[in-house]
Length: 482
Image (cartoon, rainbow, N blue to C red; front, side, top):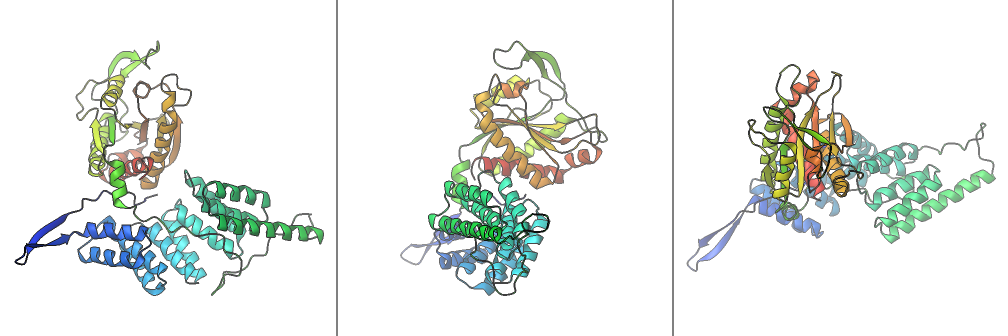
C-alpha cells in the first residue's frame, strides 16, 4: 500500500532588511508554513492550522505535500464542523491524483459524520478498489457496517485490518469487539476488548463497549430462554437493517474511526533519520569467485565466496547489473531522505566475497544492512518478492533475528504495496555468509524472478525500479518508526 510517510523538509527561512531601522522581515517558505500547520494540528489548534496550511498553498506548496495539506485542511474543518468546506478540500485532495485510498477514506469519514451512510459506503469501497489492503478503509467500512446492523459483514473487514498492522492501537480491537458482540460472538468480543484495554484504550470507552457486550450477552440469553432457535437448532442470524438515510439505528457507536495519518510531523522524521547509517550490498559481481570462505564466524562449513547470479530469461540482463542499478537508485533516495548510505560496491568490476561485504557494513557500524538480489527458478511461472532474514536458531547471529525479522516484514509489506507484486513472504535463512557475518539487523531482498518473462521485463524497467525503491524506502522508514 502506498502510504505518505515521514518526509524530511529543509526549512528555508530568509531574512531581508526593511525600513530605516533595519528591521527584518522573515520570508518563510511554503514548507515552513506547512510545518507550522502540522504542529498546530497536533495541538488541536484547528483554526490556526488552517491559516498556516493556506499560507503554505499561497506560497506554492506542491508535490506530495499538496495532497497532505488539502487532507489536513479537511480534517481541521471537520473538527470545526464546517462540513461543506471540509468536503471541498477532501475532493481537492482526491483531484491531485495522489493517495486515492487515503482520499476516498477521508471522504467516507466526512459522509459518515454528516449522516450520508450510503455515500460513505461507496467512498470506502472506492478506497478499497484503489488499495485493498488499506487498514483505515477496512476499519472505517467495518465500523459503518457494525453500526448499521451488518455485523456479519463488518467482522472480516475489521479482522483483516488488524492482521495488516504490526501493533494495532486499542481502538482497532474495540471496533472488532463491538462487531463480534453484535454478531453474537460474545467470547471473542471479550477477548478483543481485553486487548483494547491492554493497548491503551480509554477507560471510559472501554466501559461503554464492555457494557454493550454485556447487553448482547443478556439478549442472547433471553433468546435461548424463549426458545429462539431455527428449525436446525441454530441461533437465527441477527436481523440486518438497511443503511439509513439520516441516522444510525444501532446503538451505541463502537469507537472512533481512525482519521488516516496523512503526513507525520516533518521534524519527527528528521530526528529519526538523522545519523542513521544504512549499508547496501548490490548482490553478485561481474565475475564470480568460486573460492570458499566460512559460512559464519568459526564455522567449518565453507561456501563459495560469491557467485555470478542469475540473468534475465529474455533480456539477458545479468543479476549483478540489475542489483547495482537498483541499489544506486536506492542509495540516492535514502540519502535524499536524510540517511547516511554506504555501498559495498558501486561498479560491476569488483572482487568482493560475501564475508567481505558484511565486514564493510560492520566497519561503518551500520544500523541496518540491506542485501539486494533477484530470484531465479526452473519453474518459469514463479514470481513475486520475498525477503530473507536469520532465524532465532541461527548459530552465528541468532540475536539479530527479532530486529531482522521486523525489518524484513516492514520492507516486504511496503514493496508489495508499492509494486503490486505477489508477496512470497519473509523467509528464515541461516546458510548465507553475507548474513551470518553481519553485526546489525540484516535482510536479503529477492526483488522478483528474472526467470519469469513478464516479471523480468518489469525488473529491468526504470518505472518498476522506481516503485521498488519507493517500497524499500517506505519499509525502512516504517522500521525506524517514522
